[in-house]
Image 1 (cartoon, rainbow, N blue to C red):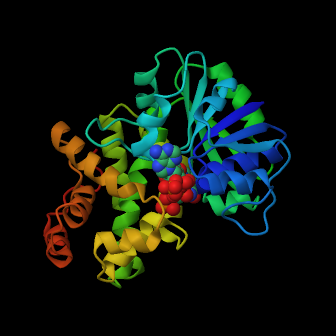
Image 2 (tube, protein in one colour; image 1 turned 90 degrees about the horizontal axis):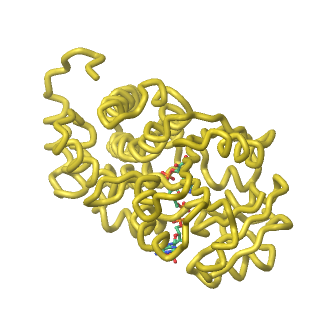
Image 3 (spheres, rainbow, N blue to C red; image 1 turned 45 degrees about the horizontal axis):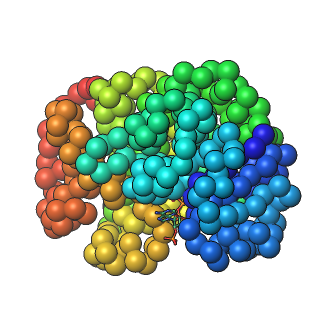
Length: 326
Ligand SMILES: NC(=O)C1=CN([C@@H]2O[C@H](COP(=O)(O)OP(=O)(O)OC[C@H]3O[C@@H](n4cnc5c(N)ncnc54)[C@H](OP(=O)(O)O)[C@@H]3O)[C@@H](O)[C@H]2O)C=CC1
Ligand SMILES: O=C(CO)COP(=O)(O)O
């Protein structure tokens, strides 16, 4: 199959490399000339020692992607609207691989795409999948969600699935996209806890209560409860909240060690989606009246700049209530 990958950061490049290895053609679009130049010379721009397979090319010209029927979105979420508005999307399949919510509109990426062009089919590819490990061809399992086009999802599954990149199908695109976006906020909270030296008990509690919070928010927004127990929910939450490879967890960890949000973001130097998603999510949960204490605590620390210890103390003093209140 022929794919254009919009966004040649770590994830877009990893997906392009995987698609190429699996016998597909992939054109990676990126704004950065150096990145595009390296890919076209067969050099992986981020992972040393990994070859760019045959059939993978890169371009800095956004209009070149219009020759492709299947478009993969691997951009930072806040840039999706402006970049995709430049492309004629009519009749295309758009597979969202980004993980976040748009500020102010609180929209998921597939909703942004549909707002730009009604006449296209949207999908979401999500799950526990660090770009570096996918680039190296290490075993990974993800979910491909679809909205209406079940036949298209089966065709895409056949093109993307491989021994080391297993692709499961799920018709709940709302739940799959929300899982990928919301886990980043919980991973920041876990990073803060680890940075403060709170220990493994606290981390396990945060992951578990975080999953309940993600599920509560998701169900209220139209997702299926069980999706949050799958790869794009619990799977990605566990990966991101426990691994040093995660930018979101690392961001929280640096805050826990006393760095300001600006300094932590500068030190990481890559997109940390949970920061903007925490802001969008706090406004959304306030508007909808959804109880989301972990999201609120993260928001108060990174957006309102409240003192970490005070926010945590208030959190721990809350009445615990019932374990499962969705
Ligand atoms: N990395 C991972 O393991 C995974 C990431 N994701 C998701 O993929 C998305 C992208 O992340 P990732 O690739 O890691 O991020 P990176 O930080 O590696 O790359 C982001 C890229 O987007 C580019 N960019 C910034 N603004 C624009 C714009 N207006 N138009 C075009 N390109 C732009 C950046 O260019 P520049 O550097 O020049 O600013 C950079 O090359 C995120 O939503 C993330 O959550 C999902 C699964 C795994
Ligand atoms: O979503 C990811 C892996 O599934 C990547 O997480 P980070 O953006 O926190 O690195």
